[in-house]
Length: 164
Image 1: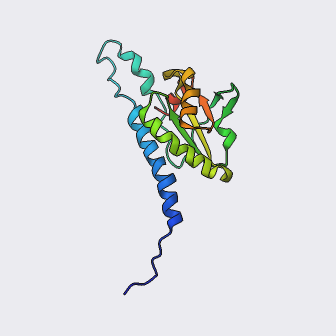
Image 2: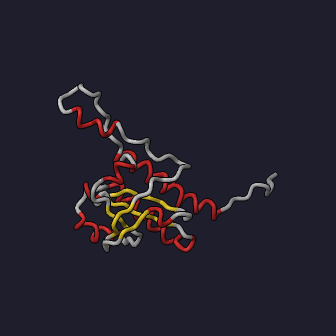
């Protein structure tokens, strides 16, 4: 005998598969691609002193805590700060044109951005410009049909702050 006490929620399943799962995959992919290499013990090799800056970094941002603020230029050269979006849900995605997983995840982020921008969702795409060619960004955006806001981490300082 079946009861109807357990009803499926197709809208919840759609949100899970179209928003939550891609976000988890994005975070896992970004960690895998951009995880820091192990730091050598000081004095273990010649030039090991170059690694001391990596050992002095603050801990990476943690879930449930405010993300470190940053200000970067967008593609039009205007300054954009993470704090500009205070009080709104924000997905900060670090990416590069040469990154294979980024090419896969960006259309999913665009879908989330389009589906929820009226709900104040912000998807802020932070290009790792220090490791990328900024001339390739417009073609990358056009090829994938992306319209989400893009900012340029030209010095790599934000990537370092977020320990990428």
